[in-house]
Amino acid sequence: MSTRSVMLAALTLALVTTACQPPAQEAGPLSEEDVAAIKNEMQAHVELVLAGDPAAVAARYTEDAVQMPPNEPIVQGRAAIQEWFAGFPTATEYVQSIVEVDGRDGIAYSRSDYSITFAVEGTPVTDKGKTLAVFEKQPDGSWLAGAAIWNSDLPLPEVEQ
Image 1 (tube, rainbow, N blue to C red):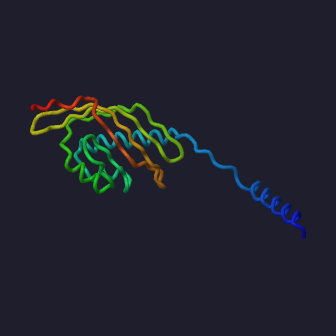
Image 2: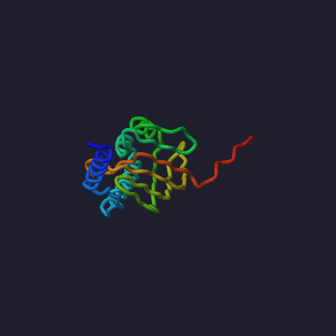
Image 3: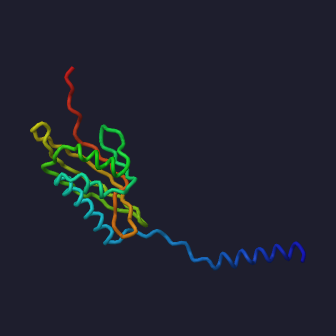
């Protein structure tokens, strides 16, 4: 068999093999059900923070989730997130207003505004700010937070010198 015949046979085989491959699947937008499930997760988070249940709050995160609270180091992993929430002051009011939920193919993000009031040494303190969270769709169809960051819209208090 000549070199030319071998090359033609190889090219033909490559073309046939490629032609038999299914077309690449494009990542689709989130379904209405997925958007509703993510919004439900966000509301559950609010309710569990108000209930003071750090284990249940942490269960809404993936095992390797990252939380980035303001003015603190990164909190890595579900167990560390639970520990962080266990030290969080008791919230008496917490409202999260969803601005946007979007994503594709099992990854989504939410952007929201929040207002939270908690007691610090018996005095109510209110903070207002914004959040960004990344959600990952689980094999059972549920959505868990894989990353979350938030920060205040309020200026830092003045420090007496």
